[in-house]
Length: 234
Image (cartoon, rainbow, N blue to C red):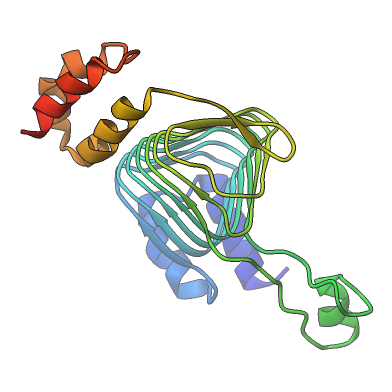
């Protein structure tokens, strides 16, 4: 077992406590951790690459973050989620268990597709391919065992149904489901969607959010609700 493997396994067992972040940066050549003190990482996770976890993020047991991964304030990853490659999640997202973000793919134009074969047998290199980074907006809910593929952007406030395979962009406040995922409805009428996007409540400080608790506790069902949202923008 190499020293790098030993350090990775030890950090995984410990749940990456704050005092070990410098150790990871020192001993793991391929890893740089930028983790807020208030972020919570469960035991049994693996963090490898450029990892940026903002305040009060929660990464549950068995999650793998490998690549250039950034997770916004108070976003939750439930158990056994995989974020592979260049993946950015916004603020206040709810990511259900066993969700996969697969930004990198295998090269298929050579005689073999296996990266390990090129590395260990041929002492060569088979770089992964990708259509672009995966970008997820704010206040996005992604259901259990969904798969998000390379190059996809998911807009603010969207919902991805359980088991969906998302291979194309998702508009803000759309609800998508299926294989491949397609829009099945909108969360709100267009006027409400537009006002919410103007409002960008996820950028408020938490004191402002608490002061506007009544706004968060109401249902937004009709075009008339857009007027109340508009008042908050004044």
